[in-house]
Length: 131
Image (cartoon, rainbow, N blue to C red; front, side, top):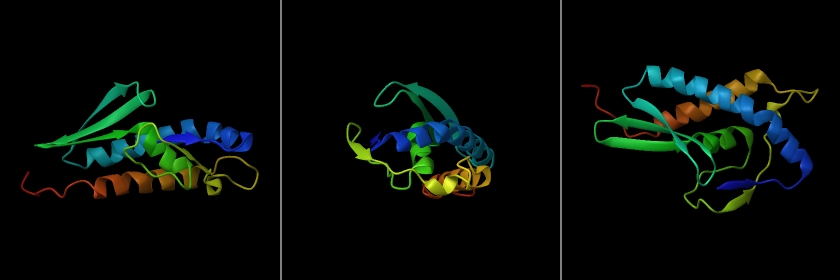
C-alpha cells in the first residue's frame, strides 16, 4: 500500500520520522537476526516503492519484507500491510513518537521499532530447535 498524506503537516511529520525510523528498524532487525536461525539478505527493489526488501530464509522457508512498509508501520498509527501494491491509503502519523516540543521521542521510536521487529519474527513459521 502506498501512503497518502491528507495535509502538509502529516507530510512534514513523516519527513521527520522516516529516516530515523529506518535506522531504528535496521538496527532492531540486526539484533533479532543475530539470535535467529533465519539467514538474512537485502535486495534492492524498484516497485511499488523504490527501496530494499529484507529476505529471510531458513531451509525451505523464505519470507520477504519491504523495509519501507515496516517503517510505515512504525510511523503511522493506521498503516497495515496488504498485498494490493497499487492501493493507496490515507495515513495518520503516530504523534506519540514526538515529544511535547515536536522533536522525535527517540525512546518511543526505538520501542515501537523493536515491537514491530519482534512481531515480525514471532509471526514467522515456528522452527524446530534441532537446527
